Image (cartoon, rainbow, N blue to C red):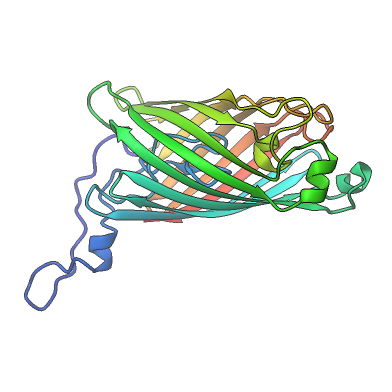
Length: 294
């Protein structure tokens, strides 16, 4: 992530009259925003950290163009693995549309849970985010503030209801506040989310203990060392609802390092602590993500 606005402007394609072609790739995706201001890719597809949504708008398009990003993430904890693929598009540094699909694999734990060895849960998430005001790199103290919503669908109705979840579909809404302080190299994010998702939706929504929306907190703190341009290291924390008697949830925590090779490639690795998932405690392990875009 860069600490200073980019100065290099991409070359524009021109038509026969010598004027920029508004339909050229460089015009549609001008890539003029500063390196790192697109954020990372979350497990739910929106731009942000690995487990937290930020106020950032994905891609590197300026206020006059669009941006896009694609990602693949892999999480391996004590008893489970999760693979996630997704894409997002940013419009005029104002609106973000995102999609992700999670393949949550139980491996040998599936047999112990009585749902079959190697059973896989599938979760689709579609999201929209709108920047209200501010920008993560403004020279003022005003942060970037965005509101967002996610619609989630879990394709495992029989198992979802068997573990006490009320619904296979759910929606989250959130407000995120993100700010980078370049002089000291500190990135701060605070997000407030309303959700009924069990394990972010992998185990459905609502439950026999609670079927109401309650606010949950997500926070990120990053440090950008000036001696390694493009690197950000930090921590994230996310609180979780307690909707089911069958399997209580734990708050999430991670420690991450992310390197922006350039505007087209980002590599992230993290240690994650996810607590109890489907009755199995101490789910700790590794997170790895690749993001590409423009």
